[in-house]
Amino acid sequence: LPDLAHVIVIDPAGVEPAEGDPEGWIITLADLEARGNELLAKTPDAVTERVSAITADQLATLIYTSGTTG
Image 1 (cartoon, helix red, strand yellow):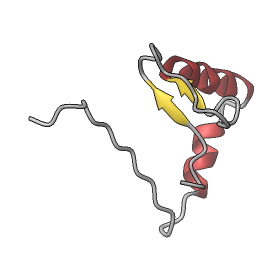
Image 2 (image 1 turned 90 degrees about the vertical axis):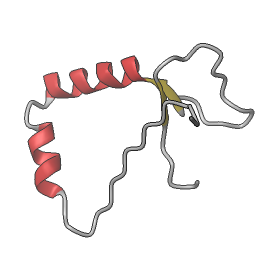
Image 3 (image 1 turned 90 degrees about the horizontal axis):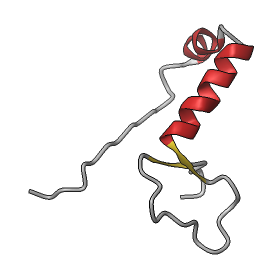
Image 4 (image 1 turned 180 degrees about the horizontal axis):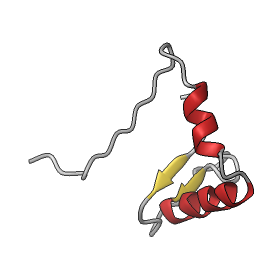
């Protein structure tokens, strides 16, 4: 997955980057939220600007799995 920038985990217990993984590749959901809050404090229009820049040919996917198979 060469285009994958980050892995975001809800519970970081036991999560270890593999050898050779870049620093900061795995982040927690709490860290992501903190980064977002920092960005919004510096740039209040950041979300509006990002949404305005979206075009119909850009694909976005958010996948959540509970980890169960039943």
